[in-house]
Image 1 (cartoon, one colour):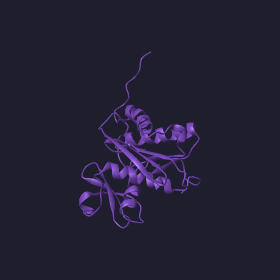
Image 2 (cartoon, helix red, strand yellow):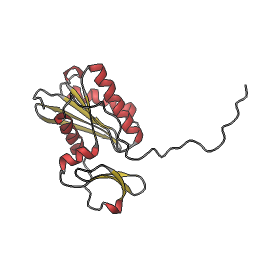
Image 3 (cartoon, one colour):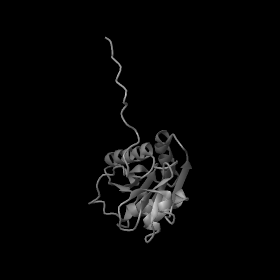
Amino acid sequence: MPSDTTLLAFDTSAAHCAAALFCDGRVVATHVDEMARGQAEHLMPMLEDFLARKGKRWSDLTRIGVGIGPGNFTGIRISVAAARGLALGLGIPAIGVSTLDALHHLHPDKTVAVAAPRDTLYAQQPGKAAALVASCDAPDAVQSDDPHRLIAALAEVAALRDAATADRPKPLYIKPADAAPARDTAPVILS
């Protein structure tokens, strides 16, 4: 990782808007606003304020780090779209980091997990692919209850990744969306 990396990381895959600023080889600040909804309207003003309070401008950034899930379907799409737009506009790379990778950064030898609907978990053992499992099948999985620590880990992982070989961030979906097309016959539209 270059020592001159100035990275803004953010995540909206859970019930929050979280951000971290990484510079001088370390995370220097984190910010978390707990919120169940409204992240789309809240994210950009929060990031702007966060940078300003830390004496930074968008033009100071050398890369973006973004949480790609798993988590809330809409929340993931909000942060990934914002990261891709910022990267394009600023001419810097955006690095996608899964919540599970951030948790593995904190707990490298443990099974890690993120809560999923209906008493299930998105779980990942070291060196294995993530999977949707029943909560009772991963009783010792490490989950994060500290969004400040998690966004800091996400920033550290994004700073460590090789920006030259990183793909554009895209949402990490471990299971298909719950939504399905309507089974009812579509109404006839009269002209």
